[in-house]
Image 1 (cartoon, rainbow, N blue to C red):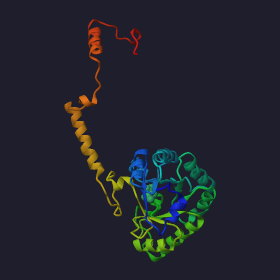
Image 2: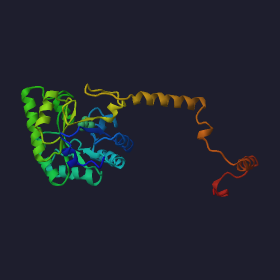
Image 3: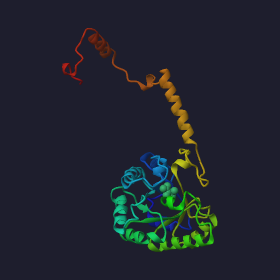
Image 4: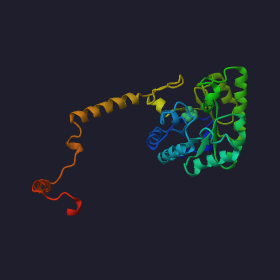
Amino acid sequence: MSKMTAPAVTAAKGTRKLAMLTAYDFAAARLAEAAGMDMLLVGDSLAMVVLGHEDTLSVTMDEMLHHTKAVARGAEKALVVADMPFLSYQVSVPEAVANAGRFLKEGRAGAVKLEGGREVLPQVRAIVTAGIPVVGHVGLTPQHVAALGGFKVQSKTAEAATTLLGDALALAEAGCFAIVLECIPAPVAAEVTKRLPVPTIGIGAGPDCDGQVLVFHDVLGLYDRFLPKFVKRYARLGELAVEALTQWGDAVRTGAFPGPEQSFSMAPDAQAAFLTGIASGAPTDSSAGGNT
Ligand code: KIV
């Protein structure tokens, strides 16, 4: 696979499904890259699964940038998409462009993602005009958790589904190269996918989206606080990790670790001289002898 770009993502619509996974550091980016992901999303979900907050509202620009830099260092072919955190783009259009730009300039991401429908069109247009590819995000938008009253399935009525379709079409028209559809009924996502000129990336939006995204820790079983219905775990690495760490802790306590393979030896004559020296009262202060 050659290096993934925003235009390549758009061009994939209708030809093949796209796989996007969140990643928050260098190690995860390397694993996701080796698994052939098309896109790595440095999601603001890092607030929850990495930093331990109860929602995504508290994560800052500086924290998102710190993690975006690490992911970008681990990504070779996958397109790195940085999530714009709460209040980094809602306050004003110039601030939105400046913050989006930091993700490319300092973070070395290839694109940004922001949440919202028609209310964020001025920001999307201005960011795209600045040469920064944008992914839209509609449906359940976790940065609105307070207004929504919790993490709930959206667009369940005909009226709400029609509004969502209008939002998605407007975002594509404004220049988004892909749009995340989160937690909406599968038939709504299917219809939006059919009518949009750009790929839809679903999470809890059924099988008919052009691609899918999941959170790294959810796919691998590394986060046990909350498991949404739309997640499928493909491994239980959290349980494996606890098992391995318990074994290591036990080995430390019994003295089985470290063994000879994990220890460094010393030349016998040097060891003998050392022991004889200190037994006969050799000075132990650092000024008395060199270390070379
Ligand atoms: O922050 C995130 O991980 C996301 C995905 C769930 C789409 O926005």
